Every structure is written in structure tokens, then in C-alpha cells.
Length: 414
Image 1 (cartoon, rainbow, N blue to C red):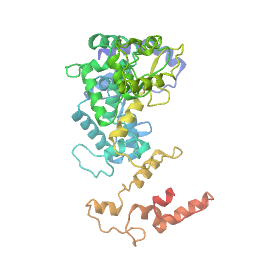
Image 2: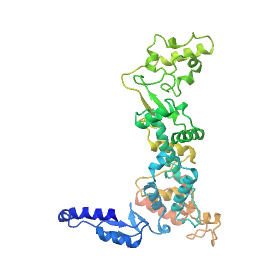
Image 3: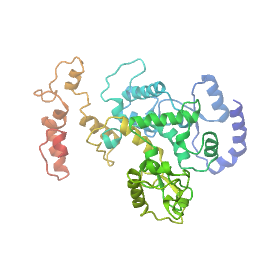
Image 4: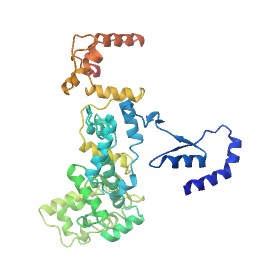
């Protein structure tokens, strides 16, 4: 109430000038969230605004209405725009427990199905299918797990790319310059991030493998430890030569400035594996040309070489979530409700009589109520039924198109 009184005093000072210039301004609205009814009326009278009541429209979708009256495409819009605005700061710092993420996904799944917490409704499409990317046959709903992991991996990228921030300097002073020397067994925020990075490596996503050093003047690039040429550091590609190196932290510019690359070795190269690796190293270094620009790190997941949370998130759940060979064919010229309906129809996830019978729902008959001759499945409803066929041919004549006899979505795709 103190904040409201302060706001009231401020508004009184400028209300006269404002409403003189704009006499037809609409009133602001105030919404009650977790407070007493009397308090919200008192606040509205002090400020001079109306009280917002549910249901109300947001982004063209009715909010606060009975979830059973909200269509699937409307709930999908709310999931992507409203429910997706999660506490990003907490998710970007701390690794969210799996149980918490599952509970958050369960709430979103029930909302999409239009079910309350105590209700059990038929789940026509698995939630993982909705979370999958549109490129692999899903609807592209953001996964909380992938979002959380992508946000915390950004801190690893900031350390690897050496952005020079205060945070980078603190982590470097506490744990060292090399990421491999950082301890993951100790209890700390940074160690928990590194542990999760290693877990993702076991699941198939290696962030470090996507971090590359783009060649410039090579003054700040480690010759042996940084992956500045090829997909791996030279210490892994030429491990026998790395053992001979006396200055293991030498930079590329300093190494190539020596009279010979083997000048910093502790002894002469012997025949066998050492000689073969030496010849391979010389062959690799022949194509190296230094430039006056500075070295910089790139992330090769996208073409611009920048670290984008969206790309990392997509890469993570493309590995973890199921995928189909056929991508989601979404047409931007038609409303989203049509795209969602077609997506469900392609997956045969609509409540036809055949599907209801397979789910154990007691119905009088599985025959089509329009023709009464054939079982009502998705192919019959949209393609084979006489009524659907006549409508399809009339639409083709209306748009002056050649009509075809289709029996399923497989014929439509051809």
C-alpha cells in the first residue's frame, strides 16, 4: 500500500497535464494476484483505475477461462509466450534438479491437455513429442531441461572464450587457467556446472568440441592445448611430441617464431612413431598463415560463430528427445490452429471413433456417422468419406486446381 500511495502522489502531479492533452485515454487495469478482495478495491480507488477480471484476452487468447474451452492451438500459444517466461536468472545460474523439472513439465503438460491437477485425461500426443523441434516432427515447445542446461553452459563458454570479465578473472584465479585442471568433486557452483557439462558429454553433446579458436595473430593461443587447428588440440593429435616439449604453455606465435619447431624439444626426435608424428605435424603447419587480427573463439554450431542459447538448447533436445524422419510441415500462411490440427492428423492423434475404441472408450459403434459404411479413422474422415471427397473436389474447382483422389496423408505428400 505504501508503494500505491507513492504512485498516487506522483500521478496527481502529472495527471492534469496528461489528461488535458489526451481526453479520451482509456483507464489502466489492476489485477488481483494472491491478495484480499478488499485490498484490491482500496488500491483501485486510490489509483483511479478499473479492476481486471478473468477471463481476459492476451495475445488473442482468452486467459483465465475454463481450460476445457481453450483449444489446443490456444494453449500452445500460451505455453510458448506466457508459461515459457520462467525465472531465467535462477535457471541460468543453478542446475535445476530433475524432479523439479519433471514437475514443471507435468504442469505444462496438464495445461496443454486441458486437465486439472486431479483430473486424468486422454493424452493423445506424448509430451516429449511436443517438446521436439519442428525439424524433427515436433511442435518446438521449449524444454525446461534443455533451457536450463543451455543457460548454465554459457558460463563454460565465457570461460573458454576468455571474455575478460570480472567473473572470468575470479574463476581463473580460483581454479586456474586450464579448464581440464578444474576440480569437479568439490562443492561449488562452478564445479556443479562442470559436472553437468560432463554429464551432457556422456549423453552425446560435447560443448568443448564445438569451441574452436579462429586463427589471428596467435599471440594468446596455446600451441599445444587450444584446438586452434583441426578439431582437437595438438597435444592429443601428437601426444609423443607433446611429451618432448619443454615449454608446454608456449603460444602459437612464439612457437612458429623459433628457428625450428623442434627447437624447444628436450632431445632429438627418434625414428618410429615420433618421426611419423613429426612429419605429420610439419605437414599440418605448412598451411598456417598468421594474420594481424586478434585471435577469437567461435562456436561452430551456427554459421556466425557466436554462442546462442537457442542453438545450444536445440542441439541438446535434438539429441535427447525423439525424432521422426518427416519434419513438421508448417505453413505460415494459414492460422496456427490449422497447423496444429494437421500435425495431429498426420500423427493420427485425433479423437476419431477408431482411436477412442482403441483407448478403451465405450462408444455405440466405430462406423462413420456420416456414411455408416466404414470405420471412422483419420484417413476416412479427411479423404475417403463421400462428404470429405465432395468438399475436396469443390475446393479444387473453386481454386481452379486439378483434383486428385487421395486416400491418406501418404498420397497427399506424394
